[in-house]
Length: 381
Ligand code: SF4
Image: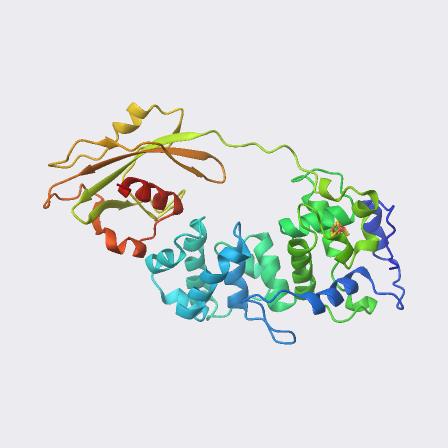
């Protein structure tokens, strides 16, 4: 396949070459990408069928859910949300608690709070219609630069290229970007924009959303982190990393800093068939979610110090320490929790700020994954 970018071009000279005239008899890189997309696009529940207009609500909802979460995990949640709240106004009228409950298990719960706040803002400030520009979208809660570009391109066909991890990988390989991430992001963003079909160059109408989705699909199904299927790639004749046999070494990344291990204790207290729980503060990690009482989570915290933060209740049995620890990894730190259990008398009142919930209805609580693990460990006989 002939291409206007030579394999030996540096990423920066490739940017300059974008202004050179296109030879109409050979498909440009953007057009090759769109032709591949037309044949191999993934069927996804939020994606419009070919030729159909995208629904901005479904695009927005899927993009928020897909942040740090896989397509496979998002699928059932997306279906549940649109079945219960078929449009943004319906979601804006829901209570935040209901939204958090439906979100439980998907992780990164600030997304759920922002999702609800955004739906309320679209309902109240925009009459139930999403703004159709990147700037307008970025002004809404929970919508950062990537999500704004993705919605603008996919829902409104704005000529912009959202760059996520998949697209970063494809672009860094195509152009053999030597600069390390995250410093390389602006350059990758510029190079990714050269993959948008250019109506002025005769590629065909913009189809910005399809160009973006084509790159997303290429990154997830062909240009995978390990063993990319280069022989199936529509851009394989133009890929610098492939020519050099260095595909898997891109994108270049600065060494990762892992957070310091934090330690703490969690207290599983039962009153007959009920469990003692509380809600986390609205702001911060797992804000507003349900948890069992626990100590602070601190680096190097001794078990004895963590245990001193146990709740005080009348008629409490002795604390039993469960064998082993519950581990969980958050984005910025790993966590280890020791679990203590105790039983209390039938009429014991919950301490201030806590409540009893029937164990049988725990599924209705907005429990983050770490708390599901703690409760399962604590209730395990
Ligand atoms: S040729 Fe291979 S490495 Fe290059 S973009 Fe295609 S799949 Fe990725």
